Amino acid sequence: MEQEQLKKLLVKVQSGKVSVEAALDKLRHLPFEDIDFARIDHHRPMRKGFPEVIFGEGKTTSQVVEIMTRMARHGNQILVTRLDADKAKTVSKKFPKAVYHPLSRVLTLEKKPLPPRSSRGTVLVMSAGTSDIPVAEEALLTARIMGNETDYFYDAGVAGLHRLLAQKEKIFTAAVLIVVAGMEGALPSVVAGLVNRPVIAVPTSIGYGASFNGLAALLAMLNTCSSGVGVVNIDNGFGAGYLATLINQKD
Picture 1 (cartoon, rainbow, N blue to C red):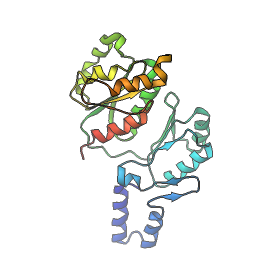
Picture 2 (picture 1 turned 45 degrees about the horizontal axis):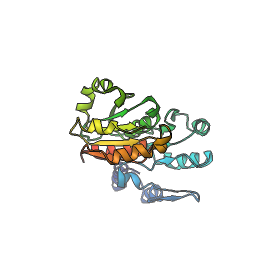
Picture 3 (picture 1 turned 120 degrees about the vertical axis):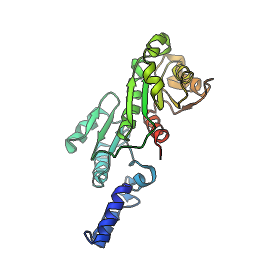
Picture 4 (picture 1 turned 90 degrees about the horizontal axis):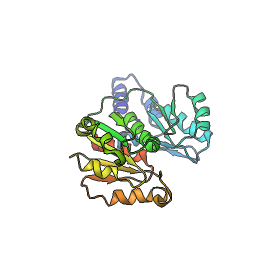
Protein backbone atom coordinates (compact mmCIF):
# COMPACT_ATOMS: atom_id res chain seq x y z
CA MET A 1 0.00 0.00 0.00
CA GLU A 2 1.35 3.41 -0.99
CA GLN A 3 1.31 6.39 1.36
CA GLU A 4 -1.28 8.22 -0.72
CA GLN A 5 -3.61 5.20 -0.67
CA LEU A 6 -3.34 5.00 3.11
CA LYS A 7 -4.16 8.70 3.46
CA LYS A 8 -7.27 8.30 1.30
CA LEU A 9 -8.37 5.28 3.33
CA LEU A 10 -7.99 7.16 6.62
CA VAL A 11 -9.92 10.15 5.26
CA LYS A 12 -12.77 7.83 4.25
CA VAL A 13 -12.78 6.29 7.74
CA GLN A 14 -12.85 9.76 9.27
CA SER A 15 -15.78 10.82 7.09
CA GLY A 16 -17.69 7.59 7.75
CA LYS A 17 -17.56 6.42 4.12
CA VAL A 18 -15.54 3.35 5.14
CA SER A 19 -16.11 1.44 8.37
CA VAL A 20 -13.32 0.71 10.81
CA GLU A 21 -13.80 -3.02 10.14
CA ALA A 22 -13.42 -2.54 6.37
CA ALA A 23 -10.30 -0.45 6.89
CA LEU A 24 -8.84 -3.09 9.17
CA ASP A 25 -9.48 -5.68 6.49
CA LYS A 26 -7.52 -3.61 3.97
CA LEU A 27 -4.65 -3.18 6.43
CA ARG A 28 -4.67 -6.78 7.56
CA HIS A 29 -1.65 -7.78 5.49
CA LEU A 30 0.57 -4.89 6.56
CA PRO A 31 3.48 -5.04 6.97
CA PHE A 32 3.72 -8.40 5.14
CA GLU A 33 1.60 -11.29 3.92
CA ASP A 34 2.80 -14.83 4.63
CA ILE A 35 1.87 -17.24 1.80
CA ASP A 36 4.16 -20.08 2.93
CA PHE A 37 6.78 -19.89 0.13
CA ALA A 38 7.01 -16.09 0.28
CA ARG A 39 6.41 -13.23 2.67
CA ILE A 40 5.21 -10.37 0.53
CA ASP A 41 6.29 -6.97 1.83
CA HIS A 42 3.17 -4.86 1.18
CA HIS A 43 4.58 -2.19 3.49
CA ARG A 44 7.54 -1.48 1.20
CA PRO A 45 5.91 1.29 -0.89
CA MET A 46 5.48 3.33 2.28
CA ARG A 47 9.09 2.80 3.32
CA LYS A 48 10.84 2.85 -0.04
CA GLY A 49 8.46 4.58 -2.44
CA PHE A 50 8.02 1.53 -4.69
CA PRO A 51 6.58 -1.98 -4.18
CA GLU A 52 8.64 -5.11 -3.74
CA VAL A 53 10.15 -6.34 -7.01
CA ILE A 54 9.79 -10.00 -8.01
CA PHE A 55 12.98 -11.83 -9.04
CA GLY A 56 11.65 -14.41 -11.49
CA GLU A 57 14.68 -16.64 -11.83
CA GLY A 58 14.45 -19.68 -9.58
CA LYS A 59 10.74 -19.27 -8.93
CA THR A 60 8.10 -21.52 -10.46
CA THR A 61 5.48 -20.00 -12.73
CA SER A 62 2.77 -20.65 -10.15
CA GLN A 63 4.83 -18.89 -7.48
CA VAL A 64 5.26 -15.81 -9.69
CA VAL A 65 1.54 -15.77 -10.49
CA GLU A 66 0.54 -16.12 -6.84
CA ILE A 67 2.84 -13.32 -5.68
CA MET A 68 1.61 -11.06 -8.49
CA THR A 69 -2.01 -11.85 -7.62
CA ARG A 70 -1.51 -10.83 -3.99
CA MET A 71 0.35 -7.66 -4.98
CA ALA A 72 -2.24 -6.71 -7.61
CA ARG A 73 -4.97 -6.71 -4.94
CA HIS A 74 -3.15 -3.78 -3.35
CA GLY A 75 -3.10 -1.86 -6.63
CA ASN A 76 0.69 -1.93 -6.81
CA GLN A 77 2.86 -1.40 -9.85
CA ILE A 78 4.48 -4.79 -10.52
CA LEU A 79 7.97 -5.38 -11.85
CA VAL A 80 9.29 -8.89 -12.46
CA THR A 81 12.94 -9.32 -13.45
CA ARG A 82 14.81 -12.31 -14.92
CA LEU A 83 11.66 -14.02 -16.13
CA ASP A 84 12.17 -16.44 -19.01
CA ALA A 85 9.87 -16.44 -22.03
CA ASP A 86 8.05 -19.70 -21.19
CA LYS A 87 7.09 -18.49 -17.72
CA ALA A 88 6.13 -15.10 -19.11
CA LYS A 89 3.74 -16.71 -21.58
CA THR A 90 1.81 -18.40 -18.77
CA VAL A 91 1.91 -15.32 -16.54
CA SER A 92 0.55 -13.16 -19.37
CA LYS A 93 -2.50 -15.43 -19.70
CA LYS A 94 -3.33 -14.70 -16.08
CA PHE A 95 -2.49 -10.98 -16.43
CA PRO A 96 -3.34 -9.96 -20.02
CA LYS A 97 -2.41 -6.32 -19.34
CA ALA A 98 1.13 -7.29 -18.38
CA VAL A 99 3.87 -6.43 -20.86
CA TYR A 100 6.82 -8.78 -21.38
CA HIS A 101 10.12 -7.43 -22.67
CA PRO A 102 11.96 -10.50 -24.01
CA LEU A 103 15.34 -8.87 -24.55
CA SER A 104 15.72 -7.88 -20.90
CA ARG A 105 13.48 -10.68 -19.55
CA VAL A 106 11.47 -8.07 -17.65
CA LEU A 107 7.69 -8.17 -17.17
CA THR A 108 5.76 -5.09 -16.08
CA LEU A 109 2.18 -4.67 -14.94
CA GLU A 110 1.18 -1.04 -14.47
CA LYS A 111 -1.93 -1.03 -12.31
CA LYS A 112 -2.21 2.75 -12.37
CA PRO A 113 -0.06 5.65 -13.54
CA LEU A 114 2.40 6.79 -10.92
CA PRO A 115 2.07 10.44 -9.88
CA PRO A 116 4.77 12.61 -11.46
CA ARG A 117 7.99 12.10 -9.52
CA SER A 118 9.69 15.23 -8.21
CA SER A 119 13.00 14.59 -9.94
CA ARG A 120 16.18 16.36 -10.91
CA GLY A 121 15.84 15.41 -14.57
CA THR A 122 16.36 12.55 -17.01
CA VAL A 123 17.94 9.19 -16.28
CA LEU A 124 20.07 8.36 -19.32
CA VAL A 125 21.00 4.74 -20.01
CA MET A 126 23.78 3.88 -22.44
CA SER A 127 25.54 0.69 -23.44
CA ALA A 128 29.05 0.16 -24.74
CA GLY A 129 27.98 -2.56 -27.16
CA THR A 130 24.89 -4.13 -28.67
CA SER A 131 25.52 -7.27 -26.61
CA ASP A 132 25.17 -5.19 -23.44
CA ILE A 133 21.65 -4.04 -24.37
CA PRO A 134 19.73 -6.69 -22.34
CA VAL A 135 21.27 -5.40 -19.09
CA ALA A 136 20.82 -1.78 -20.21
CA GLU A 137 17.15 -2.46 -20.96
CA GLU A 138 16.64 -3.92 -17.48
CA ALA A 139 18.02 -0.68 -16.04
CA LEU A 140 15.91 1.46 -18.37
CA LEU A 141 12.64 -0.35 -17.65
CA THR A 142 13.29 -0.28 -13.90
CA ALA A 143 13.92 3.47 -13.92
CA ARG A 144 10.90 4.04 -16.16
CA ILE A 145 8.32 2.09 -14.12
CA MET A 146 9.60 3.85 -11.00
CA GLY A 147 8.41 7.15 -12.47
CA ASN A 148 11.56 8.64 -13.98
CA GLU A 149 11.84 10.44 -17.27
CA THR A 150 14.24 8.24 -19.21
CA ASP A 151 16.31 8.29 -22.38
CA TYR A 152 18.86 5.94 -23.90
CA PHE A 153 21.35 5.22 -26.64
CA TYR A 154 23.26 2.03 -27.31
CA ASP A 155 26.46 0.78 -28.93
CA ALA A 156 28.73 3.73 -28.22
CA GLY A 157 31.78 2.08 -26.68
CA VAL A 158 35.39 3.22 -26.56
CA ALA A 159 36.31 1.41 -29.79
CA GLY A 160 34.62 4.31 -31.60
CA LEU A 161 34.41 7.38 -29.37
CA HIS A 162 32.90 9.50 -32.15
CA ARG A 163 29.69 7.52 -31.57
CA LEU A 164 29.65 8.65 -27.95
CA LEU A 165 30.38 12.29 -28.72
CA ALA A 166 27.59 12.33 -31.27
CA GLN A 167 25.22 12.03 -28.30
CA LYS A 168 26.79 14.83 -26.25
CA GLU A 169 23.54 16.80 -25.91
CA LYS A 170 21.88 13.85 -24.15
CA ILE A 171 24.98 13.21 -22.06
CA PHE A 172 25.39 16.80 -20.86
CA THR A 173 21.71 17.33 -19.99
CA ALA A 174 21.02 14.07 -18.10
CA ALA A 175 20.64 14.21 -14.32
CA VAL A 176 21.90 10.66 -13.74
CA LEU A 177 23.77 8.44 -16.19
CA ILE A 178 23.74 4.64 -16.21
CA VAL A 179 26.64 3.26 -18.25
CA VAL A 180 26.58 -0.44 -19.11
CA ALA A 181 29.72 -2.13 -20.45
CA GLY A 182 31.39 -5.51 -20.70
CA MET A 183 34.82 -6.45 -22.11
CA GLU A 184 37.31 -4.11 -20.37
CA GLY A 185 34.55 -1.90 -18.92
CA ALA A 186 36.14 1.39 -19.93
CA LEU A 187 33.10 3.42 -20.98
CA PRO A 188 31.96 4.63 -17.50
CA SER A 189 35.41 6.19 -16.92
CA VAL A 190 35.19 8.10 -20.20
CA VAL A 191 31.64 9.32 -19.53
CA ALA A 192 32.44 10.35 -15.94
CA GLY A 193 35.35 12.39 -17.26
CA LEU A 194 32.91 14.44 -19.36
CA VAL A 195 30.13 15.25 -16.88
CA ASN A 196 29.56 16.67 -13.39
CA ARG A 197 26.65 14.29 -12.71
CA PRO A 198 26.48 10.89 -10.95
CA VAL A 199 27.50 7.97 -13.16
CA ILE A 200 26.29 4.47 -12.26
CA ALA A 201 28.55 1.86 -13.85
CA VAL A 202 27.14 -1.58 -14.67
CA PRO A 203 29.61 -4.31 -15.64
CA THR A 204 28.23 -7.07 -17.83
CA SER A 205 29.35 -10.66 -18.28
CA ILE A 206 29.95 -10.02 -22.00
CA GLY A 207 33.50 -10.68 -23.20
CA TYR A 208 36.12 -13.25 -24.11
CA GLY A 209 37.84 -15.61 -21.66
CA ALA A 210 40.03 -13.12 -19.82
CA SER A 211 36.99 -11.00 -19.02
CA PHE A 212 36.11 -13.73 -16.48
CA ASN A 213 32.35 -13.36 -17.01
CA GLY A 214 32.38 -9.67 -16.12
CA LEU A 215 34.97 -9.67 -13.34
CA ALA A 216 37.48 -7.75 -15.47
CA ALA A 217 34.89 -5.04 -16.20
CA LEU A 218 33.84 -4.90 -12.55
CA LEU A 219 37.40 -4.42 -11.33
CA ALA A 220 38.12 -1.82 -14.02
CA MET A 221 35.05 0.19 -12.96
CA LEU A 222 35.98 -0.05 -9.28
CA ASN A 223 39.46 1.21 -10.17
CA THR A 224 38.33 4.08 -12.37
CA CYS A 225 40.39 7.26 -12.14
CA SER A 226 37.29 9.37 -12.94
CA SER A 227 35.46 10.79 -9.93
CA GLY A 228 31.74 10.40 -9.33
CA VAL A 229 31.34 6.77 -10.41
CA GLY A 230 29.34 4.24 -8.39
CA VAL A 231 29.42 0.57 -9.39
CA VAL A 232 26.74 -2.10 -9.06
CA ASN A 233 27.15 -5.85 -9.44
CA ILE A 234 27.74 -7.72 -12.69
CA ASP A 235 24.65 -7.70 -14.96
CA ASN A 236 22.63 -5.85 -12.28
CA GLY A 237 20.63 -3.50 -14.48
CA PHE A 238 17.79 -3.53 -11.97
CA GLY A 239 20.07 -2.32 -9.18
CA ALA A 240 21.32 0.50 -11.38
CA GLY A 241 17.80 1.62 -12.30
CA TYR A 242 16.70 1.58 -8.67
CA LEU A 243 19.77 3.48 -7.47
CA ALA A 244 19.35 6.04 -10.24
CA THR A 245 15.79 6.66 -9.04
CA LEU A 246 16.93 7.35 -5.48
CA ILE A 247 19.61 9.75 -6.74
CA ASN A 248 17.22 11.46 -9.16
CA GLN A 249 14.39 12.18 -6.73
CA LYS A 250 14.25 15.59 -5.10
CA ASP A 251 12.33 14.71 -1.94
